[in-house]
Length: 312
Image (tube, rainbow, N blue to C red; front, side, top):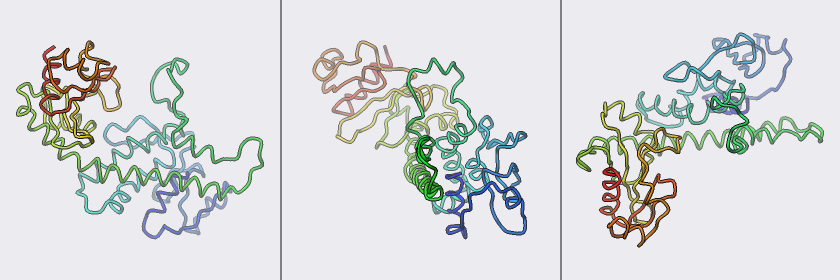
């Protein structure tokens, strides 16, 4: 509800709206006063500004694109009905298509996790005792949870604690929105140009060259579908912040550690002159132990590494 309230206060006329935290059902149901009710009241009725998800009959999801599996929390309900308005208000002059791109990306990368955790949905289908490491303890939901009083201290300053929770959730929401609107979205044009010119980079069409570094991974998958790419991209070559060049294997999915075609196993963990001698390519810097990325001091060297990896 902290995130839900923060997002509502971003809307015109609601920036200083008072927040009353209560479970008093007669007050909640009293239609004589104008209010927006979130996370309490056992009613989901958008026309009446009622946004609760705790009732037994509730099964609402975002319901667009592929987002039909995760039940919404109060934050997800507010985002479903007002998220596009918030994107338009805070991101300036975006086309309707770009508003949708940012809207769905924020849901996928931020809001859906809040929904899932609030509704007790695991991120994967497996025995939870078999996970390899503890996850979730650094996420937003866990950090907001730590603002509650400890079990052995008296409950106090609930409104002040909620205000801190709203500020924490809001800061993260703002940063996410800024990233996708101001960094991720403009990169789409660069990645599209890379894909359209991939046969100029290499006859196979499986190596792309970025003219400048940009967030490329999530755009690749969407644009490959949009452009009906028959042979998917395997490597992306780009200049890094130090002026050297990287050759990076494209993951099988955006969040995956598995690559479509990792750099060859004998190269992994080898560095500098030893790597150059092994490959017969000058100026090699490294290949990561997992094979997902390598480096060379020159663009030509990085391209040769990608070409050789493609042939092996």
